[in-house]
Length: 249
Image (cartoon, rainbow, N blue to C red; front, side, top):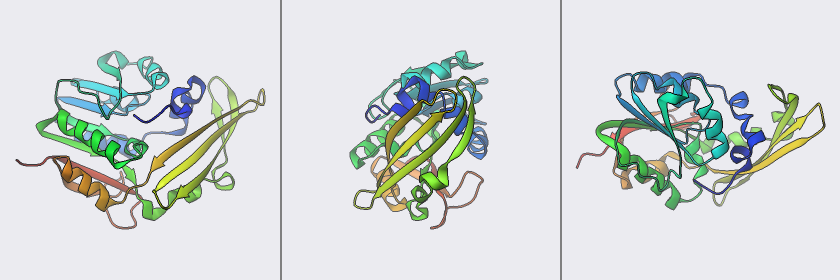
């Protein structure tokens, strides 16, 4: 995956991921899609919450480039049932196929060029069984969610299990020429005044661009969802969520 990002690669910062990113309807949807799947590949599995939840009675592999995130994943109850692999989703080839491939948490957006997007979609196509399905999410650029990622709107109070009370906030800048948003994440630890910070980048692609890249990659979309609650996609939907499989030869 893209270059080192302290938000995921730094041990202290990675420890905030589960605290900040609770699962809900996205987990429920992936569980429903996995109901008849004998195997699941979770690309960009992060701290492994989804992969572990899907592991009962089926083969599950989780791939992520961040060792700090995988350390958290491997320490979770039930993690032994998942094959966690440190690797780059653009290039990894496992030599096996899966009935379901998931890429959640907007992991698709960390790929900042069309070449990188094509590469990760090629990875999906290479690992998908003939009748398998894939699903991933990407924020809809028309909603301009990055405008909420500013200090005055994003400040929040957290309680970390090891660091105690923490004040967190973000800041962000959007480049309209590229669609790339550069955002900062800050955590101020109340107990000792230490500040942990990271700068990250993500790409906002519109549905037409994603659809064209999927077609180029030999993938077809059976349904476009606009949120994880089951709503259909529309121009003002918060998410772009393609659900599909391999295109017919």
